[in-house]
Length: 490
Image 1 (cartoon, helix red, strand yellow):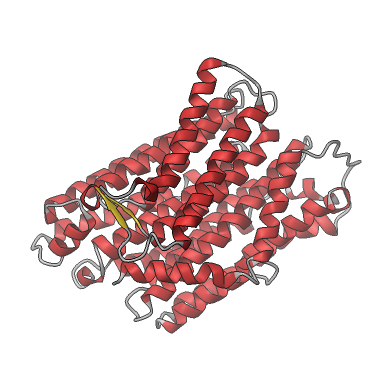
Image 2: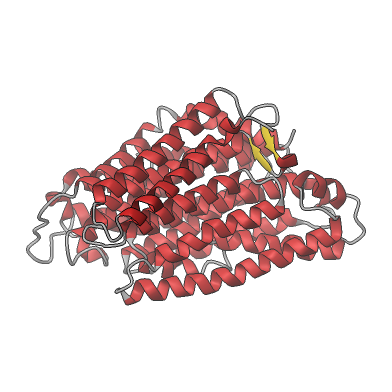
């Protein structure tokens, strides 16, 4: 048995969920938000530190640490993404301290967040399609409940129901795709699937299976055509949950897609099952539809939801540009963009939560008019998020987009980079609408914000600082990402 220390981040998150469950059993309906938020934050921070320590000490190198015959693999890529999941989870648990004030089921909320984060770390370490499916469900089931957490809010319940129904359909498609892959290859283990897929005569069955598995991942990453749930779920869910879904959950979908399509299916089968072409179509349609839809929204939350679909399109370039001889670099840059996206997108949704906390504002662009005069520090952070998401050099989003497009051009897919640049220019229009409203427009009525919530404010400012500091510290992120991506092709 490999040393369990390699699974320390996953175990810490699971133990935190268990601790919250025990506390809730002893004191049901407690409103001690300091205890619940503090326990969840300490647990996610401990998992973050453990993942960082394992990555720095080289635990993920030389094939990583394997458990149960390769069913679970802790390598550089799984640790890199675990840092993303735990960073987002920490920001969300800190921000939720204020958002859940007065709620009677806070222990349930934090337990669900920790269970979903546990599933994400397992998903990043999945070494077989069976583990990937079970882990995906461990992520999905808590998030269905989190979206519908505000039980007295019709929008939240409706969003949760729609999310659950579409999620159940996508799970069925994913499971059926796995069964077809098993029928064609006789195995669910990624390494065995790769060997059998290159020699199988059942290319038709394998091809349909691969496309159905791709559909399952498209749902989790909110890629077209399985994106319909995202605007409804993000708008109806509590804003911290929207941040969690659009950042950590999306990254979880991508990490398992990266591993499945590079290790299990590989580029050897593209002569018979051209999944790279499928990802090229998916990337172009996803980034274009997401950005055009975001540009037409009057609701800030829905704008951010559609923009997150557009951002998923950029990340898909990592898989769509494979085969051009630049594979580790282009896939590594997709991972880096997800890392930066985790902070700037989470920060943007938490800023919406902050504005919602101040009262009857936070829905339309007009609600943000003149906000810069009342809350300048938070609005500076939101400005950084908006411009960084658009690709303006105020945050790490500029470098991650630039390098992703640069590597795509280097791989010979200049047209994918061109589509990305055009979409980035379009996105500047709707991101700058928020900035204009905060700093240039006059408030439509007397604006009085009242108290400054400590947790939300801290989380927003922390996310803004990390987004800016990633510019000088970019090498600390790109090197492990490219090393982790290179290990998939060795």
